[in-house]
Image 1 (cartoon, rainbow, N blue to C red):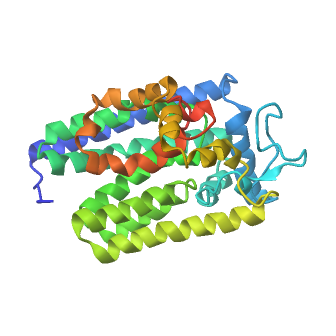
Image 2: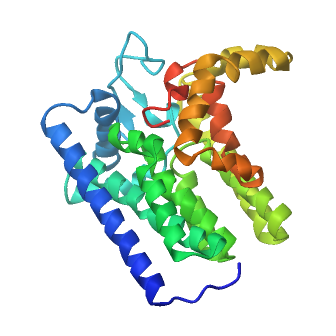
Length: 321
């Protein structure tokens, strides 16, 4: 992008974004801590995450025993299961260091809110360079903070994947501004949050090759994403008693529909609940993402994962999804 020098208005705009992010963080930290103190958080998933993170420091490593025997696929044994048998979230290792200072589930709620709030800055920086307007960039940062689906994720306990609201925004910003080292730093942090994120990062790399002609860094990013998927499959194979993620059952019906694309589209995209999910995602931004399909395509891996799942929660527009 063309550089855009900082003027007095620019610094005021950046200050406004910092204030908005601080207000966002203060509000949601107070909301979540108060909810936890009032027993309004949940054994699933806050208790599950708290137990797995505690066990990183105290052992057995990443072990969890909390599960709902009625509906959960992760209730494999009364002795519990490794977290790696369900999700691949190595970001939890550095997160566990926070338990050295404050070993409490509220630590996770505070940390999650602060990370997500930080995403307002790359949203502002990206919009400033693309729209060439400091004021418009503040509006885009505010849209990021007010986006309902993102707030739903922040207020539904703690999940590592919620970090990626900000981490992928940083990755995109540094990719756009061609700061390769920082792009890889945030790409790695994002991939460490959940197993489908490496697929998104791989698409980022291909996008960079096609639209930026950055062959080396783009292909390296794609290769890193593919390699990370391989590591995930290997770790899950040894961590899971079934040899694969205990959540794969959510997609059993999809494999039989792959040979019938029309039926697949009818059941997983054009069905009313799935259409409502897409509406919930797009309407807060006035459907503007559809006007830039070459950027919107970056969201397809996660959209496909949610739309093709047999779990209605994933296409509800709620929870961490």
